[in-house]
Each structure stands twice: as structure tokens, then as C-alpha cells.
Length: 320
Image: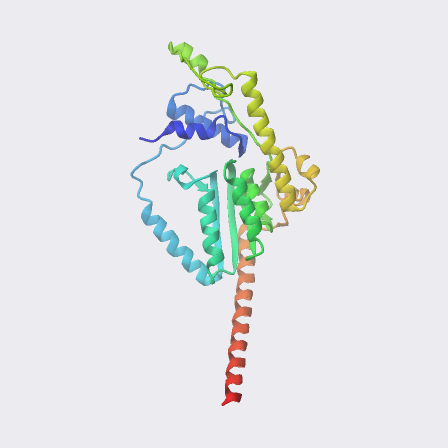
């Protein structure tokens, strides 16, 4: 049995770096799976349905095939492609194999492997995500920003790079967008779940005994208090300031310019004009360009190795 209460805890009462539409879909999933009876939730007027998870889904074989294809791709092109798709979560154990998700620890492990692999000349991030968890995102972003100087890295927005996903793209640098790709949403959002009306309707009364003034903050069994609202608001504002400051640092922009975007999203040329992307390029054109640069780098290194080997051979001949 899946621990749906743990998953709900990742959705509500947490500052998230995700688009509001995606958060509404996640909340709708919680509503559907846990019978929360949320009545004021819709996306474009409709209640979204999300796929039920399957404990017996045979994904191990597919993972093995994907790894084999990845190794062949690196051998052929010299480019390691890191997918950043779907909802972003902090740890792999939080992922559902039936939903498109990426964990920050998964991305970090793949980048570590690419940096250590002598066959990898460049690293390309294939980004198509509405964002996700704040927890763990800044740690990954700082790691990626530091890794810029180890091997060339690029971010390809294919086709959504919003919120936490955009922070990853900004950390990587060298951001490409197509005419219909979107970047931005530098903002933080949180929702509180109030089940008190439902409990009353069902004849359920929850009695809480707690010690410590903040122990019962954000309880779903009662309307949100002023103290809880202040706590959640302060947390969201704190993460928002950190988000704005970090993007400004990564992109070499003024903090005021990033904050002035007001968590807006920017498509195509508008993303370049605002300073969130570097060029207009289709995803395929971007990967072709990166692969061509990797081939040139590989060829140059091969030539240098060959010249070095010939020089050593000549030096040995003069000693005989």
C-alpha cells in the first residue's frame, strides 16, 4: 500500500517552486486518491485526473535498455544528455514510475558520472518540467553552477523550463529556447489544506494535544490561524528572495530585474530579451550544435595526443 499521506505532505503546507497549474493538478490527485473532497479546485474549469500507480510495473528492463542506449550515444557523439522531465522531487524514493518525474539526487548522480567519464566532452540538459520541490533544488543548483568550469554544459528547454526547472537551467547556463519554449516563473507557492468543514460534515471531530506554540501550525483539521499564515508566508517569502538572488547570480542579472518579472513566464524571444535565455534554437538544432562542438573537441584532443606520441617517439630515437 502506497503511503499517500506522505505524498500529500509533499504537496500541502510546503513552499514549492512549481507552476500553479501543476500544483493544482497535484492537489487534484490527492483529492481523488484520498477522498479529500476539495471543492474549490479546478484547472481550466475541469477536475484533472491523474494515473493510478502500479506496483507491478516492469520498468527494470526499460531502464537497462535506456542505459545501454545512453552509453552508445556518448560513444558516438561525446555528449551526455541529462533528462530533467516532469515534476521535480528531492529523492528518487519519492518518484512514481507511472508518472513523469525526476529527482534532484538522480540528476546529481548522472552529472557526477558524466564529469568522471573521459568519453564525455559536453553535458546537455534536456529540460521539460513545470518545476517541483524546493527541498534539495538549491543544493543541486549550486553543484551545477560549480561544475560549469569542469566540462562545457548547456540547458535545452524542450519545451517547459519553469520555476525549479528554470533554476536548474540558470545554474547550467548556456540556455537555448525554441520559439514556443517557455522559461521563468521565478516564484514560490504554497497551499494549505483545510479539512475542518469536511470533518464536520462527516461527523468527525479531531482533538489535538500539543506542546510548543508552533507544534500544531498548519493543521489540516482546522482553519488556518494567523500564526500559521504568518509562518507559511514568511517561509514562502524567504525562499522567494533566495530564488530571485540565486537566478540573478547565475544569469549575471540585477536582482531588481529578476524580481520585476513577478514570477512571469516568457516564451521564445521574450525569454532571451528578459535575460533568462541565450539563444533561439530548436531542441534538435541545439543538440546538433553541441554534438558538433564535442566532435571538434574530441578530434582536437586526439590530434594533440597523436602529436605528443610522435614527439616522444622521436625523442627516444635520438637517444638510441
